Image 1 (cartoon, rainbow, N blue to C red):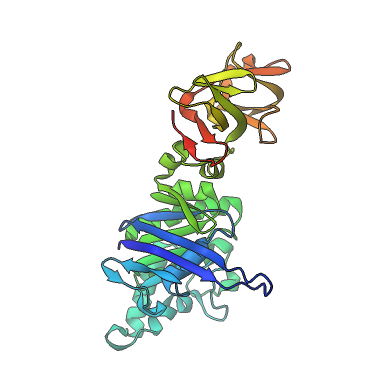
Image 2: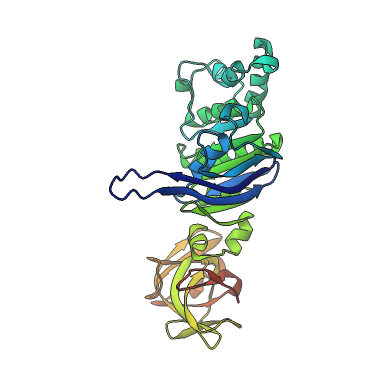
Length: 364
């Protein structure tokens, strides 16, 4: 089901009696989420991701704005009537109930024509249990399960009513690194099989980029950019988005444009036709460096990290805001890394420049 948000805003009253300054958790949120897609809602802690999710499922009421599921406005509809499945960060399983009882709990609350017999509820519970691969654990209680298994129970419970929308609030944050990787692949598989529109909240950009059809990057309650993960990575609209996406992170230098040439210090590192003279930030992706004996960008070599197929050259530069510059190059070029300095040329498509004042992207 398609989800449309129009100027959605949530303002919380100040807890500071002296300043009485309101907190805008979600600010003029306007977006259309296509039917049947998995959307990553991404941003740093405190940016308003979870608040946006709570507004969608009806746990909180917006200060202003509208929410549509398909063609129907649900802004004032109670949470229980929205047809939304919610997976919480801490799973929120009932410890005294078995896996089966946890999964069928939402079905037991159905009334009227929707009410089901116990046999039908158990059949539906087994269907979703097989989907998330926990059908052999139905008689266990949450304390007898691993973190990954508990997460699957929480997903099964959200799916058992076949909701119109599935909302997931940082569902992998309590898992170890290996289990996170496995579980996020499972979430992607389940979403593709069910074709339920899913909104997945996380502060982990790698997590969001790996499984999402589209990502929404937020900061301070405001949408900064939306798009396919690779497109947003390759074409960030501002410095915040460029710095937030990417592992290792983008390398940010202080620089300037003079006579349509991009300078880092006294060295012209790239031609930037059509850009007027100004002070800028220069963002260079780790894969944007090319080793060159007479390259214009000269950095102090720190160390070389061997990664197998690639190597990471770790270096420093006085005008780089990062503690260290990380450049990813092919292992075949390892012999070219020696001495105290390392010289680079740059790949134009991996270099982004931003206005020093507004931090907005400058295209060249």
